[in-house]
Image 1 (cartoon, helix red, strand yellow):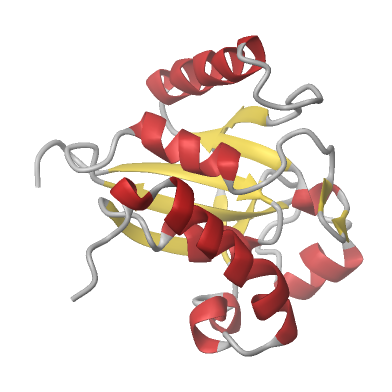
Image 2 (cartoon, helix red, strand yellow; image 1 turned 90 degrees about the horizontal axis):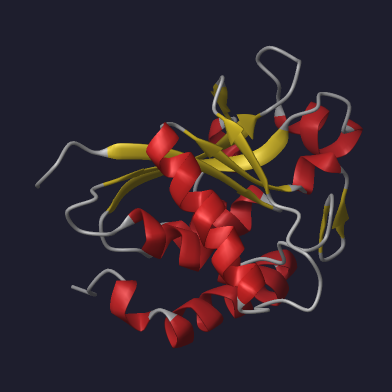
Length: 183
């Protein structure tokens, strides 16, 4: 591995979806589902997803090797794997826990993400304005073990088949060059 690994936290709706997408990418060393951006210490899935009163977003913490995958490539995948124009909503999931957000871990990431959003808006990549928040990462709370690797363990569950599998098919079509090699 080249340069030191970096961390970024993405919120693109349900973390089961976002985790499944980022786990497919070469250069992504680890992906952990969790919560960030709220006021409650040590939140759990029930509080965030069902009660929606913690202020946290469902997110994934991605550790990546910038010598293998560029931050801009991660941004590209992030913005093509969810709808960054709907405030507090992804599909049928509604509430601020499903907001589009990037919790950056360096000023360089912040500047690069802001420039990327401007680039997308100039290119009119979306019909509506991008509402993705750019926020410095304060605290990340890992979700319970039962929420980790959810898609991998539940591929035949209806939500996985109807929502996550199509996202992965889109990923394979649009970003084949960024995917891990199959053994």
